[in-house]
Amino acid sequence: MSAEEKNVNESEQALQDEALETVEQADADVVESTDAPEEAASADAQVAVMTEELSKLKEQVLRSEAEMENVRRRAELDVEKAHKFALEKFTKELLPIADSLEKAIESIQGDDAVLVSAREGVEMTLNLMMSALGKFKVEQLDPVGEPFDPQYHEAMSMVSAPHAEPNSVIAVVQKGYTLHGRLVRPAMVMVAKAEAGNQIDEKA
Image (cartoon, rainbow, N blue to C red):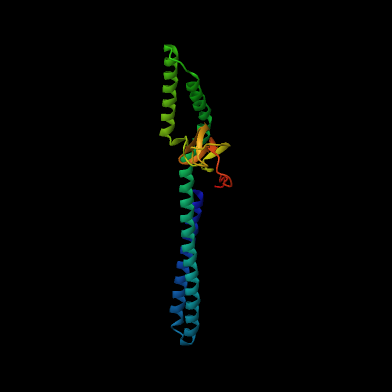
């Protein structure tokens, strides 16, 4: 139990004790007043006051319970976010390595046995790395052919592409990544130029 929850519990207990003492005092006052009829009206008034005070105390207890529940929920959300995104900085540090492996695969061309073996080795290393990232909910963004999405893509340039849909991604300069659905790095893309008068929508 956190210090904040402990304080709320102590506050609730104090309010309940105070309410109980108030009711007991009201009951004692009523008993004492029954021996004196002329004091009955005064005793009734006291009971009414005490009852009103008791209602207020009960309301305070309910508010304290609601506040404690809100604190508990906020704490659970904070813990959940901490677990999900604890690896965000570590993931960012790994992305340049993935980029370098992809560039290495692109640069190793040719049918020579040594080159083929080297390319396969790099591809295997990259696949192992991507598999490990996937286990921790790191997903790659490779949006070729998809509509441009400013939430996940960063447009590097717009080019004429008569056979592509306007505002669609025709090439990916650098792949993007997400962690548990939250953007870690946008994909850097080239976008098909829209028809005259239509501009790319860069609003979220």
